[in-house]
Amino acid sequence: MLTPGAAEQAEIDAYLTFATAAPPAVRETLGVGSLRFGPVRALAIREDPSGFFNRAGGFDASEPITVDLVGRLCRFFAEQYVPAGAIMIAPALLPPDWDSIAAKLGLTTGARYVKLARDLRAPIADPVLDSGLRVGRLDPAESREWATVMMETFGLATPREMIDLTEGFVGAPGWQQYAVWDGDHIVATGSLHLDGECADVFGGATLPEARGRGAQSALLAVRLQAARDAGCRWAVAETGTESPGERNPSLHNMLRFDFTRQYERTSWVWNSLTSS
Image 1 (tube, rainbow, N blue to C red):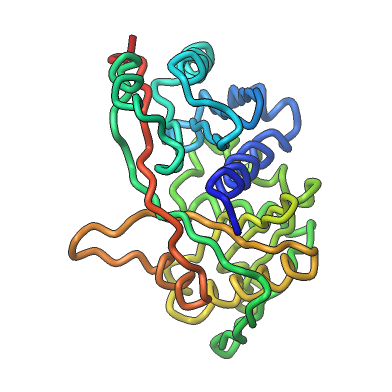
Image 2 (tube, helix red, strand yellow):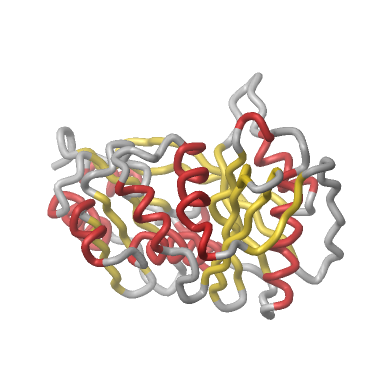
């Protein structure tokens, strides 16, 4: 059975190795910092205005979650000079005194995510790509175009060094990158991080003009097969929850490929202006 701790560690390890695989000059320019202690990991990118990558996670049942442990993460964000950082903890792992810990450290609730998992022993459906599209493993010679598509689609391409950062993890240990092409041009991206029994499905992005043509389904299928071939038991992923009246296409794509909802998780946000 997949534990919340294993799912959380697969996620944060993917983010951490994504950012730290970049060349030293890129990491220095962007102010990439990381922290590891026990199962817990934290990442900060000072010059990323979105703040998306300022996060900590990897908590599991082996490490009691105390005010001292969470306070160490808050100090890390402060020392990295980022305005805010999100602390991700699976709901089943929150201690009974979590409300007191959060209040003492000035943490507030932020974005909510759905954690999903898929048993890789189950059959993998063959997706249907529109005519003219093809899916496959990325050639490193196309890494710049691929990184640009990924980060511009997510709205994370400012400053431009964020594209350098993304280009830097193409072919990094434990990583596989895939793309969908329309003719000679990349229109969708996806990555896979292999982490023991878990494979983290990461960075699925499709250009607006290519949506609704089967690109993300094809990328899911090829990555699930690659994870199975690598000996992984589980594929894990996360995406934003749906508010009433909203529809998250990424969530429904994964559900169609037999991912199951594991839990919904709240981000607990440390803020430099309001936290003690």
